[in-house]
Image (cartoon, rainbow over all chains, first blue to last red; front, side):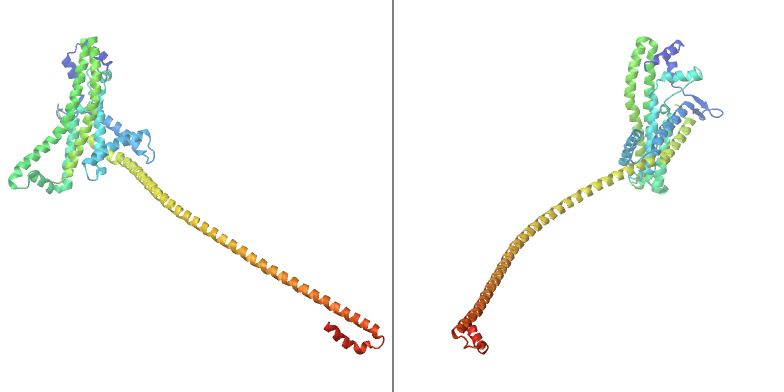
Length: 280
Length: 156
């Protein structure tokens, strides 16, 4: 944290305004992948970071898993089994089908991946900016936290949403799924069909929105607060020290948020998928 | 806050990660953990079996011990009985033997006495004849009167 100020001072020397600083840090490394850009733009930073982290965490777990022994586990295996048991217990309490074939591994993936992506918030923002500007020029942009990109959280939430509908149809059949759209939760009488349908539509729309926006909002806000504290360094030595101390405090508190948001995201994933399996 | 192609790319990355976990990460961990759980459960069951077997064995050994004690006391009692019996028998045998020896000795003594008597009788007869010869000088023919003399000797 304390070493951030060098970069910030450097930014300040380049006569950057506070809003310019924040804007720079909140801009994506966006690359158009076809003519005209618009929707066809890829946030390279978000994509590269998330894929690298996904490969890193799941790769590490995989390295342990493929050598897993039923005998006395090593320290690595013990840790992975701790995480495994934690996730498995949570899923077991919520979902009462064959969780091992899909839902529990999915929960593990979501938890570890989101946790790793959230953890990128601990990287000092200006270190990242410094490294990137060293390689890519001073206007190069790089956002290290993939979960503070709404594309990531929406991608996860929508994937879960699609899985939810897939499982609902798989378990209840297409007829059963449509039947539930109109006949739950208020009953099967014809005159409550519109109310049921409206209710279900609201639910189906609000689920991915709340699922993704909760994670996005927390991580985005966390990042903005780091930026605001980092901005303090522009006021001089006192501001730098105060910013560093508060930044350290916010980092420590952020450990909780990072873990908690990853956990909440995982739990909601499991709950939504479990609900899709239940018939009313 | 713009939604763009990143969303699709992230969704694909998510799908690949889920596939990877479902296929390669979860099963070996689950297998290892379940195998260990089974091993522990088996171990506990074996321990419980061992405990109950131990209890049974302890009970059995107690029963065997009491039986053995009972048998031992029986054997001792029998042995004592047999001992007294042997002593009694020996006593009886010794008495019989003693009686037999005494009887034999008595018979021998009787025989000796008889033999002595016979000897004496023979000598007395010889002496009587010799005396009578001396008295009667040649009047008595030894041949003619030996039968008479023998009769006389037998009567002594």
